[in-house]
Image (cartoon, rainbow over all chains, first blue to last red; front, top):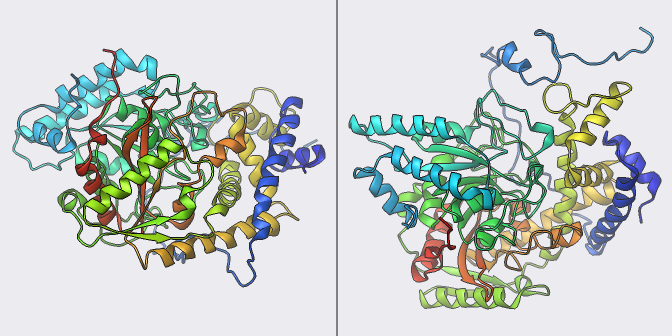
Length: 96
Length: 487
């Protein structure tokens, strides 16, 4: 139903490191769930518009005026690493 | 006898005629201190803040101010609803240190009305689950029998009301996460229409399905709390700008000419016989109250679980992409580069069910599978909604069991995610179609566990839904039962 390689690929896309045990478990469990959702193949959906949202969603506009936003200190307060001005991340460009 | 045995209206009257909010709040906090070790409804109580808020309400009342009927009533909040300055963890290691810099819209509304926030309650991590077992701080127990689960994902809020730690609580409902735990814990739970209550400050799981709603000991309590939290908020662009009825004022008015729909698909395989019997009895209660019973079919309801898990997980995989270990949330100590920092932080911060849903959603949205899974699910979602639109031309409410079974045991379902998913069969469609739904106590199993009755209504018909539910509650005594409390 679902191969080990597919699970590894999806984990990469979903940015998750998985343990060997998790890879095995998810291969089996996700395969079973995907097998179940195949029940949808029996429904004829030709000429049915997809419904992403129940409300008739349209763009909600407001005037482009400056408003008070979160002060920098509060915005940074929950950051795992910051220097008080910016969020700190590891080096991104290798060899720079 | 606990101070919270009375009806919501009696509680409101007690506060209006001399009992102080401080004494009521203190008695709730005492109950939490003495009994929550066995239930584990709370992630954290907020004792000092609650007593200060209660003293302020008492002061305003003594000064002669006219206060909202909810003023002075303690309320518990599911820990995925942001509270300024108070940790909001989603019962996840990812957010164990997260202290929101702002209040959710519903919290602002509650504070303005004078409700007393007494604590944050346990949930399945990020609201993903049906048992409150998927919590990084351990499971909540059902107050009726602590070997059993309280349901989920708002199990902490449901248990807090059932165990009389708080007369009111808020939860969130994405696929039944208010109604199913209400059913398991023998309390009332209301999921409002999608768009009725602002989601600003609710930590997102599946944004097209999530909705905040009340728990209470009776339908009046749900009406009282609904009135406070409903209404437009420009900070949630899906919040709907239309007038909100005053349900507290009308909830005791019975409906005349009520038409109750009963769908044959709601009585299929897997339905517990005692739950079925209680539901059929409820139909007779409505008949005796003068309602017309109308047989219905909702032909696409059998696809609801498949549609739900594809859509909810797809939205979750997108929403949870924000947890990258940079702006807030957990960051791993050890990693080899930037991408690995994301992957290691998420691997450590998320529990198994969250990972499973991120994986399923990522797969369903990935190149080559999008049409077959996600897009297909969106199309069947419309067919499910069309079934309800047709049904509500003929009936005012649709009656069904809330859950196919009474509360299962802690650990009983946790090895088989699909089996757990399948138990959401009766609640999920309301989220896919955006309908309001309520669960009210409607019986007890032979093993002494509550059974819940679900009523669904057309979008924005909460006022009539609450009145219809109140008719049943007044005609029976199920809402007045409480578990034995060990003092």
